[in-house]
Amino acid sequence: MNIRRRTMIQTTALTGTAAVALAACGGDNGGGDGGTGGSDAGGSPDAVITFNNSEPQNPLVTTNSIEMGGINILANLYSGLFTYDAEGAPQEEMAESVETEDSQHYTITIKDGWTFTNGDPVTAQNFVDAWNHGANGANGQVNSYFFESIEGYAEIAGEDADPTATMSGLTVVDDLTFEVTLVSPQSDFPIRLGYIAYSPLPKAYFDDPEGFGQAPIGNGPYRLVEWNQNQNALLEVNPDYTGPRKPANGGLDFVVYQNPETAYNDMLSGSLDVIDTIPPSARSSYQDELGDRAVSKPAATIAFFGIHMEDPDYTGEAGMLRRQAISRAIDRATICETIFSGTTSPSTDFISPAVAGHSESIPGNEVLQYDEAEAKRLWDEAEAIQPFQGPFTLSYNADGSHQEWVEAICNGLKNVLGIEAQGNSFPDFKSLREATTGRTITGAFRSSWVADYPSMYNFLGPLYSSAAAEGRGSNNWDYMNPEFDEILQEGLSATSEEESLRIGQQAQELLLRDLPAIPLWFNSVSAGYAETVENVEFNWGSQPIYYQVTKKS
Image (cartoon, rainbow, N blue to C red; front, side):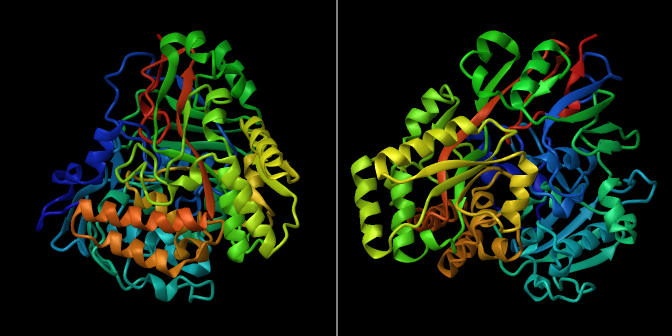
């Protein structure tokens, strides 16, 4: 993204990555809701809309949530500097202007008159305090690495940091203005600012962080009524919200489901309004069954499974060969066609086709192609170096639609490599995430990524940078490669989008060699909604545009 000299981001946002993402597909949402929608939509304006959800892994804090169960709720409770429209282009929410001369030093001015739902005004200090808190390693926030590009992050990122330490790159100018200095020019920094981690936090959070996480106070289009853990989270309209995501309904009810089949049946009966994932049993029939209420479109998401870099069976030269052998033994095309009924497509790299930078011709990507003979050759070569202790296990959460494809992969590994392979079921997504982030999980474990903002670097940095491992973020396989980190920073500092994308693809060559995670397929939005609602649209990151959905009159 190129920011002109002293030019506001809103006038240039579509000259870079966001514009290409828009042209590439027009997809869904990751970190913000997007779209302009609003109260002009038809339907009942007072009715509460029900959506399926998973139980949030952590308390509801913007800097400590990285999975969709929490983010779906938080994205509606908070407003940041920007939101994203349906195609992924940033649009101003709290930002009055974001100005820069060199893509390294930014002056950010927020709009006047915004308040948190407890009545406190939202000021520049609320943004700076939230970012410093999120970055400080002593606070253990999982989104810490999102602040690594800000000057002074490295000095406070460790777990033994002074809890009161702040980043030197953040300065409050006045109530509505703050300045940000980055460690280097960052081509996609402005695009990131719609992600939930960059939201402001009120003083009430710092007075009682633990209690606040159970009953957060936001500044977004909705406010929390109650969170009944493992059941639902009920949100009502925030009457003081003045941004572009003006609710057309009376509230949102996020209902936790342990079984996607149950959610689908509830949607068919009308007791659930919108479902964002179609279960395996309905993938081949849901479009005929739902007609115009079926949703199928590209999205900025990817599915994969990770293997911890220190797992004894997968370390060193033997481990690298073994990872490659496993990848080559997976018949992605057949799984996509038979299990997902063509709603997914085999991965050819680590970047969703919905985002600029995706490629089908990166050197080394043949490791993602099914080849029984090559898989066996690689496995035998690994065995000659270090025998496999096994068995191969692939962990997944039973409350999602994963058992069928996990079993298909394990059966393929048995047949091609002649090894013992089996699925390892966790009862729900929260328990899988706790084992994953707590580093207690063994073997391979499923994961997926919904982009936080429309940039290829959001598929690379949060998942594979050393900072994202050290900060206990989304790099749950603890891949730490200085060469990769260096290329990543070089790409972020590039002065042109073309050069930035080229360097990002170069970084992927290392990932294709090392395979800290093994890409499986690119997901599309496969969703639907009941006859009870209208004005349903899914955005670039695969989520509904919540605020515009209405009940039929």
